[in-house]
Length: 100
Image 1 (cartoon, rainbow, N blue to C red):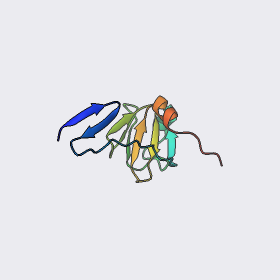
Image 2 (cartoon, rainbow, N blue to C red):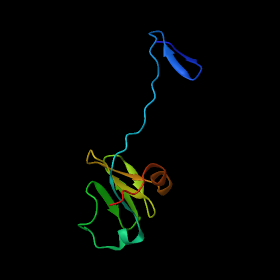
Image 3 (cartoon, one colour):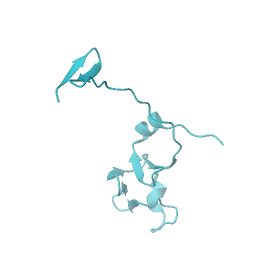
Image 4 (cartoon, rainbow, N blue to C red):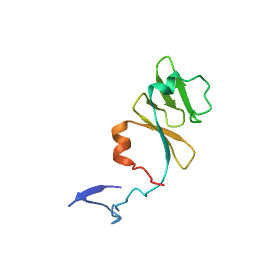
């Protein structure tokens, strides 16, 4: 299938057109990683399920998404049940605090 760019629209030989999508607003639970994250006893019942904590390297690894983070980053629990780790700047761009 050959694709051609035309005035910011993508069309194919089948006249399919690229459509625009918006990220649906969803609510997630998240916790910011701090030095205290690694200083607490391990295993810690407050730690997020599906995330491996390494107090020696002071990193966390989200096992399903293979994302790695450290102090200042955020652990985000998605509605699917999996966890991802986002840098603080990406988290701030993507999410806002839900009041109430």
